[in-house]
Amino acid sequence: MASGNRNRRRRFDPDLDRRGDRGEGPEIYEVDLHGCTVQQAERRLLEELTRCRAARRSPVHVITGRGFGSKGGNGVLKPAMTRWLQGPQGQRVGVAGVREVNDGGALEVKIER
Picture 1 (tube, rainbow, N blue to C red):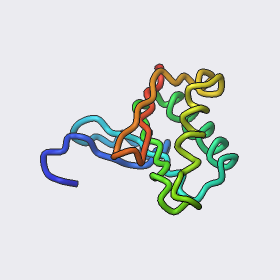
Picture 2 (tube, rainbow, N blue to C red):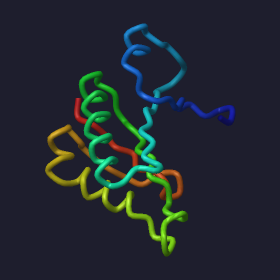
Picture 3 (cartoon, rainbow, N blue to C red):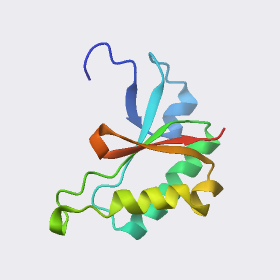
């Protein structure tokens, strides 16, 4: 990462969190959904956001990609995950807000604590 970037990125790992990893600035947890079908992505997102909420971690970056590798160049994961996060399933895991980041290749999800 470029120097001066306050945010550190790492995958959510409850074992590391118990050891008290102390770094500079807020950490942004990532869930990478590349290569998942919509159904696989929904299950994975449910598991990961449930863990993050239990560990009181927010925000979470959900990496969907931009869909350039999809047939016709139109991605299916980002629109499907946005609907999922803003719908009743997202409410159940405490989603408080969703916005696009990384030039549309990811979603930043805020979780109620």
